[in-house]
Structures are given as C-alpha cells and as structure tokens.
Length: 267
Image 1: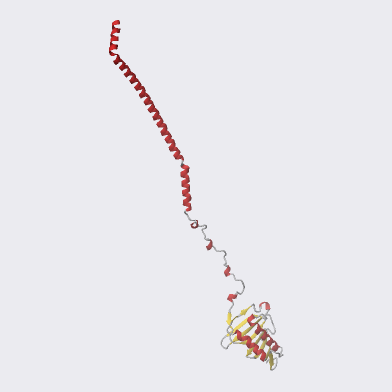
Image 2: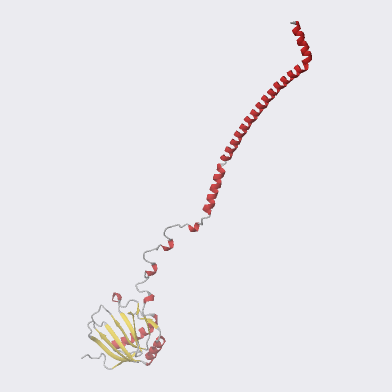
C-alpha cells in the first residue's frame, strides 16, 4: 500500500504538469462546452429573437396591410376623378328634349285674334272716278235698297223694295261746289289700296253701304257698315248721303239740283 502511494506520489511528481495540464484541459474542455452551451443558448436566444423579429416583421407586414383605408381613399379619389372626367352636359337630363316637346296642341300663332284678321282682309286699288253709291237693309220690305249712279256730275237715284219693285226714282245734278268737292275727295284715292269689306256690313240688320270706282276698264267696289265708312271714304260717304237725301225728297239744296219730274213716274 505504501509502495503504491509512493509510486503514485513519484508519478504525480513526475507527471504533475501533465496531470495538471490534463485537468486544465478537461477544465478548459468543460469550460468550452459550457461556453458552447452558452453560445448555443445565445444563438438559440438570438434565433428565438430572430423568430420574434420575424414575427415582428410579420406584424409590420400586417400593419402595412392594415393601411387598406389609404388604398380605399385612393380608389375613392380615383373614382371621384373618373366621375369628374364625365362632363355634366353630356349626361341627358331627359329622354325627350324640352325643346322638342310641344307646349300646346294648338300653336298660339294659329289661333286667330279676331274673326276677320287684318292680314287676311282683301284690298283693291281705287280705280278712276266714283260711278255708284248705294245702301241696303236685309230685314226690310219697302224701300230696302238704294242705288245712285254718277256720270260726272249727273245723278240718278233708284230705290227698290225687297222684291225688286222700284219704289222711287229721281234725277239730279251736283252743284258746282259739290262737283268740285267730289273731285277733291276722289283724286287722292286713285291707285291707293282700300279694303273691299270693312267692319260687318248689314250685321244685326244694321244695313250696309258701298262706293264703286271705275276707270272704264278696272272697277273696285268697297262695302262697309251703313253709316260707318273707313276713314279714307268718310268724306265721300257723307257727300253721297246728302245727294241721295235730296233726290229721295225731291228737294234741291247746296249739294244737288233736282231735274225733271220727281219722282219719276213708273209705267
């Protein structure tokens, strides 16, 4: 036993360094393993951290995907821009344009404003001298129509009943003053247009009157309400009315001189 211990001590003395080195080596190996373990653990931690980092990155990615409202706003803005690109004037407001829709079944321009529109009144040029004047009443039995012919200053009046029978007849001549007045009234009218009909002749049994002009080739007859001639014929109507009254009454005056038997006897 002692021998063995001694040998061991001797060996330890001889190999102490080696044994210490072995121990150190073992210790170093252990330390290395510990370090490796720590390093491995650290690496694992880092890896785990990296995993967390990757998770965080994934979270970042999710956060970036959460930015969808911004994209939605951009899409909405784009849609608004697209709608703004469509002109309002190009969008029809109605299937039927208002300009093509008639405002009335009967155009107002086609509705007459009077029974006898002034634009439709026929006219004729006054032709030459006054050759006849007359009057008539539709609702009448005796002395219903009167006709006075003129040949220059010579006059002849004939009054008829409704059945055509001559009721009165007389002849006369205009006085010098009346003949001059007649000429002064006719001359300004020659060649001028006058309505062929004025007012409403013989309406409501009011009677009608007329004046006829002729130059031997052309003739124009202008008819109007009895006692209501157009302005251009007022002077002539009054002069003829005075002459007719003188011959009807067989009494001369400043306008007419009665000639012959008055009234003229009828066969």
